[in-house]
Image 1 (cartoon, rainbow, N blue to C red):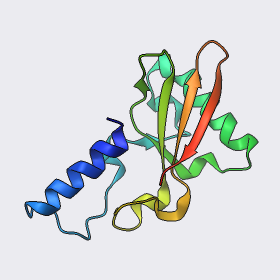
Image 2: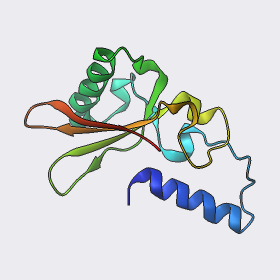
Image 3: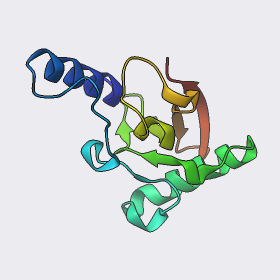
Amino acid sequence: MRLIERIMLATILAIAVGACEQDHVFTPQEIDARPLTQIDAFESGDQMVVRAAIEHLSAGGVNSDDFYLTPIKRRSDGLLELELWHKAAFAEPLDVGNPGGQSRTLVYEARTNAIVEEWAWQ
C-alpha cells in the first residue's frame, strides 16, 4: 500500500472513531515529510535521488521549493517511488483528491539516475 493510501486510510479511520475532526489539516511533521530542496535533510544515499527529482521538476517549469518529500519507497523491481506533497496539501483539510492539483508521485531509476515516471494524485 502506497504512503498516500495509508494516510488516507488512517484519516478515514480517525474520522470514523472520532479521533480526528473532519477539518483536520495535516502538517509535514505528521507524515514525516521534509522540504524537497533541503537536500542535506535526507540520508546521504538518497541525496542523488532528491537532486534528480528537483532537476525533473525544474525541467518541467515547476518550482521544487513548493514540495515536501515523504520517506522514499523502495519497490521490489528496484525502482524508487517519491511521494511529493505540494504545500497546498497542508493549507486545507485533506479529503479525497489532490488539493491544488500539484501533489504527485515520481519514480526514479538508479541505473539511469533519472525520473522515469510521474503521475498526479487523483
